[in-house]
Length: 77
Length: 338
Image 1 (cartoon, chains in turn brown, blue):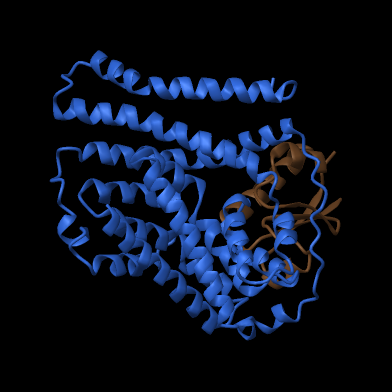
Image 2 (image 1 turned 135 degrees about the vertical axis):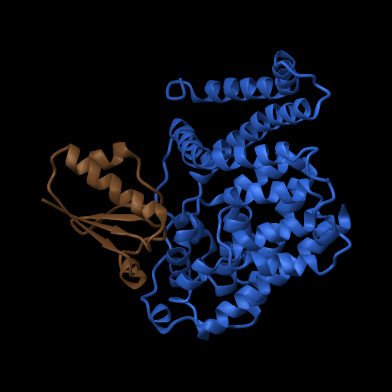
């Protein structure tokens, strides 16, 4: 079970990132809890400078732009 | 091949690109002459325009986006911040505006970047120079200007865009408005700006170039196609000076009006291009249209709403006024120079 947070103020890239992570998780049969963080003050506590950011189990694994599918798949191996 | 011999790949790719680019005029004539209509007719002229302009603009866009994608891989936001942290006003504004062009940037990242810069001790005015140049001088706008109006106009746009970012940031810095940051931003813990390891190989940078092409060109090509189709379609059907009376050079008030209309509108460069092409084709003056385009891209209402969480109203109003004034000046310069 992975705890995933997507950090972003709600632009198209953020929504696409959420969709992509849900898809890849479903395809690889990984159980995830996905949370979207849109509050800028909370986002900044992760010290990222580009959104969307992705946090898995408390660790920032990605920041800036929609991650490529291969990278997302790598998180669920 | 990009993975095994990246240098050779870059050389061959640029030769191939240049070869195809030089053959475009002949190719477009060949396509039109193969179609069942005369070259001299309205339709023939419109089709030749379409078959020449479309691949030309798309090739320029692909080339520039690919190169920018590779260059971007050298300038992550973290490295840019480390370059700017602790510097004084002045030269740092020039650097920030230049880095704004080179650092990958999406408008929804404006606020995290802003806070990240301020937290690491980048002066407020320098941060603004970066935030203004990043969206305004972008590769899509440059490629389109290059494709449609030639390198002189594209270069003028690049220089004036940088000039606005440098001067506007410097002015905001001189106004000493640090007190108009929201309290929670000022109270955030200071961080040390670290460049971080880079260590990307040339092959990986080429991959970044391809990723940028897929993401940017993949997204904007329908807009560009639509814009060129509109431009080709009205070729000869709508009077050329249709817009001239109210958006031409003689109408001095058209530049401020264009900026005012542009502020509440939100679009990226790609979305506004079809409008720009249509306006120009109908006789609007280039400076007026560029002022409109810069205002739509650089000043947008949704961005202000997000920035409001970080800046107090007075600083936002100052930001809008300073940038709008810069855009006005650019509009008048373009109208006067051409």
